[in-house]
Length: 301
Image (cartoon, rainbow, N blue to C red; front, top):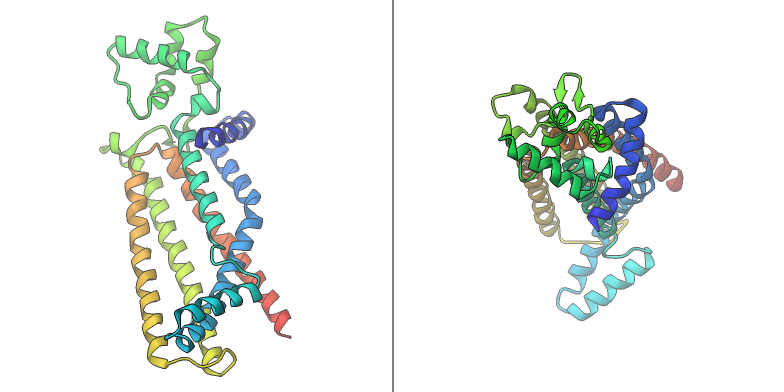
């Protein structure tokens, strides 16, 4: 399945590359287009997050009211979801799309010759064998990246092979070689620039999301205390708020740590995609948040 989507994305990336003739700029344009295509889903997700946050306060009321009657509690909770026209699994679709996108892009960036240039596996294996016979090292994980790097040698070896010309992908982006894998080039300081920027953008994105969620929770909690959503037990509210805040705090550290491990073992082209995606996501959330606030204010009036 991931190979199928990687093939589709490969056609798009190839078209963009042929326009700008640079892999880095093609990745940026590719990321912008993917973000625009997913914008309706992003808006729906942020709406769902806000609605879920409001719903949590009503769920707490039900949980407290029917804490000694689990069957009645579950029935009332399902009725609430039905009344609010929401599903307990509302966020699943977004999560599934993100996983499919993540792995498909990984396949694409790991094997640009296969998915961008559509060179057959037989030809790729032939080129790999030629490099190995010459004593050149070829990565088992990213052999196609090494073929791109050895384009000049392969062109001399196969002057009549038209497919070799497809290996001539311009990977240099503002002085950075997007074909390099940080783990394999530890002494080259330039391989750390994009991963570090990506990690910083991840921190900003997660902190911003956490702050938005906390602000929404505090707003809903105030409404609940004022009697707009019913009554709950104060200690229970404080304990649940603390638990959620602790979870968010842990996530703000865990996600960038996971990002480091992935960004340093993958070609810089993948980290480049993630970096641009994070920057666009930060801008997207800010704009959508402003839009939803205006929408909510209009509804309250």
